[in-house]
Image (cartoon, rainbow, N blue to C red; front, top):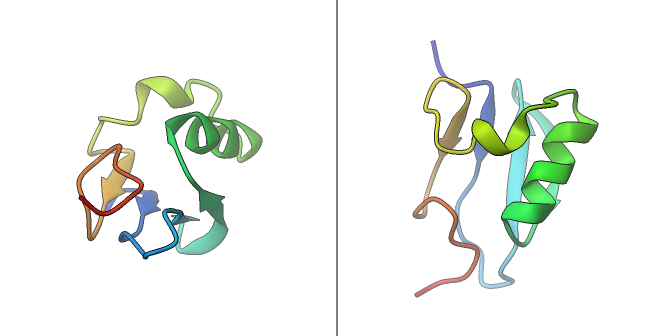
Length: 69
């Protein structure tokens, strides 16, 4: 089973698309925005799931990176 939260690749704009259970949840530009988006989506312990592969998958870029290197 794949992670319910996916942070998608790095576009040139510096924001990443986030999906929850394959539904578009929003766009984020940093971890603080990601945590807030996840809390709004019902993940109340969001800061603790950012590095847990059971909860979140980082695709097309390194975790916690929001701009191209």
